[in-house]
Length: 136
Image (cartoon, rainbow, N blue to C red; front, side, top):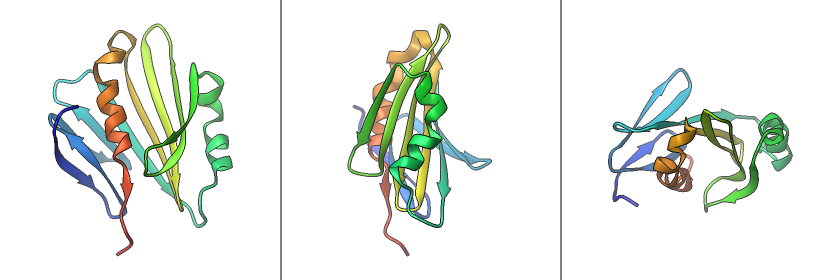
């Protein structure tokens, strides 16, 4: 895994950007890409009034789970939830539905099916570094 060179930080959460990756925020979506990369990692965050339950994640992910090649529990020490993988002849998708308190994260990585092994380890690493920040 490349050396980490930067933190991408919001008011309530952060993650590590490996060398050669950059992030930007536009239209309520945080997009993370590698310079001259083959795919994109996109993060949407929803904040609710109550803590997000695992049942909420299962409900939100129902359509994706129905077409998934793989569904697994996800816990990397930060927000926890469900990770699914699916694809077809043209696109590869890895999707995480994560929760921590009132925060629900919908994170997707997609690329051409032929390129699925090029960046997935780095995308997994980025998601694995996602951490909540203490309240101000």
